[in-house]
Length: 161
Image (cartoon, rainbow, N blue to C red; front, side, top):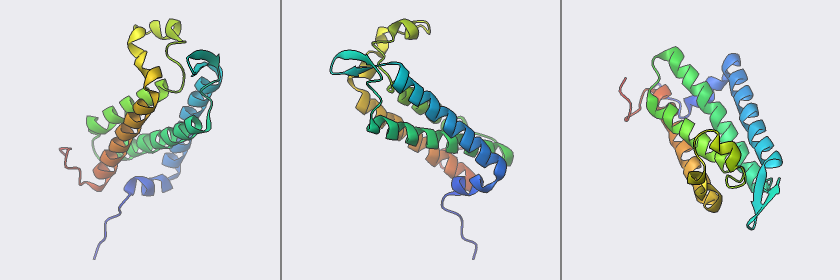
């Protein structure tokens, strides 16, 4: 009897090109997060200090987000090879990485940089509620991994094939 794989997203990483894409995306996202934690201001209490967010918990969070990002990009490319990519997984992944990365540094301290993109004080809640935002980010990334995995298994209940 044919048994379906439980995690085809991991099985797809056995292909050399997809593994290379996974490794490059994982390394790039982790490096950018690490750079933001080490070089941009972070909060220690209510004081802005360069490198204050370079903590073991933030490094672990960045590693998890980086690995999930690499898996998602490789999984989306594998889905594209097999058929069509649905927007649900890509949207959840992109939003999860974005808000997770924004918690790696103090947004209040870098308002001049952020205001170049058209947002400033609206992101002040990221500093105060960074832990909760990280949890939401991990939930969104997990949802995206679930959707990509389901699409690879051709069992996605949210997706229309």
